[in-house]
Length: 165
Image 1: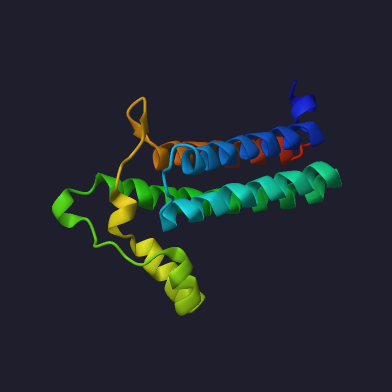
Image 2 (image 1 turned 90 degrees about the vertical axis):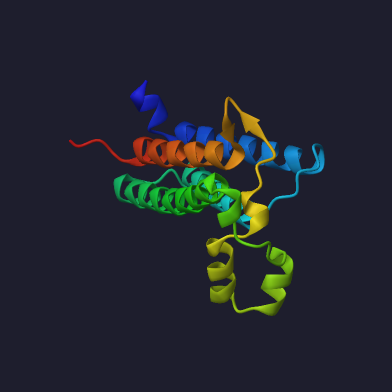
């Protein structure tokens, strides 16, 4: 079984999981009418980044060194996504009197501010990011995204790290 997953097929499974996560995110946005906050958008970027790396690894079929590089890239992107999702979960757990005020939309910030300032503003959070509008088994969507990103990072390392000889 491990040999099966240590191949391009294993990376393709990662692509499919990322595509499924993005399909659900788009479903909640366009069908259920839940507009994503800036932190949600950053989490989507992390999922898309993982999907792209998994896709390139699927197509490339790299040797041991290349697979280590893919494992490292997947771990890095997953950790960044987990960090953003963790911040989002923390904001949602704040008492109402400690929730930051709502800020401008991400499109406005990207048009108006330099990118580093946008990152600082988004990661500091806003009131819209603290709103909980969906739960499954008691966990919010950012909590599920955090779990998914962590699992994809671990899976990406497991699939791509070549065995010792």
